[in-house]
Length: 277
Ligand code: ZN
Figure 1 (cartoon, protein in one colour):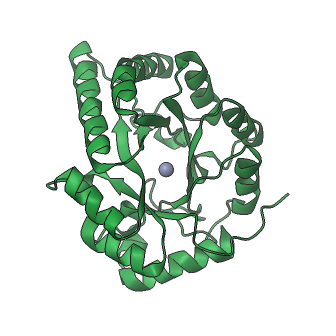
Figure 2: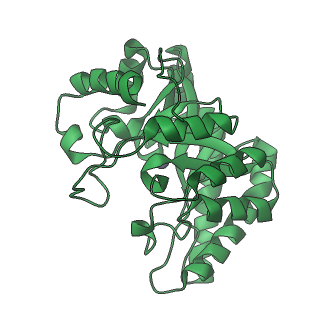
Figure 3: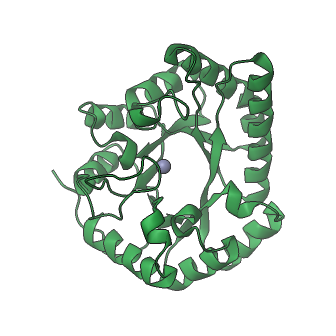
């Protein structure tokens, strides 16, 4: 079963990293002009700015701030390293609150020299330590499982099942998942686990792009929707069947596309959104 084609841009969100050559100001102005409705702000794009003022400028353009990317990296070899990670996430929560972003996406972290199960334990403890900050600010946290090729040093959470298990064990309305097709499309349990996220009320975000063959770089060779093999309309049907009505967030890291004219590229993004997402 495929989802019906998208006929307008009302649920289109673009991540600032997708058009990385542009500043936060240029991204938000260009997105608004192109009819994009939502923006996910990466912390590097926000650096050096007052988050409250930046948030107001973005809203004045008519854009919704969907999330702040990213927090996480809880796993560390030492207790001091884990404490520092929690402090950094507290700063991210304060930043999201000032910006007016309701959600922080978590890339949870991993340490290559320790077992993945140990990293997952540290991740759960790190998130648990942040729950009082979430309660006082209302900011929610989305665990984003990453493709297993990043299990060495980026995330020990590699499947949606693992993320859902963590959400269940943490038992907080402030903790859910971000489902990113790039990381999850290969998983035979994906349909069932998306449905489970829905039942948990935990499907907080949905990220789209495509998987290119061959992929020439583990990080920065994502494709625009339609350039690869991910069954985007099938996965969106599962996400919508799970009750998700939020933004379809275009998150593309691509050295190839960053090297192109970003205005032309933004036109390609809206066309790929309508044609292939
Ligand atoms: Zn993502």
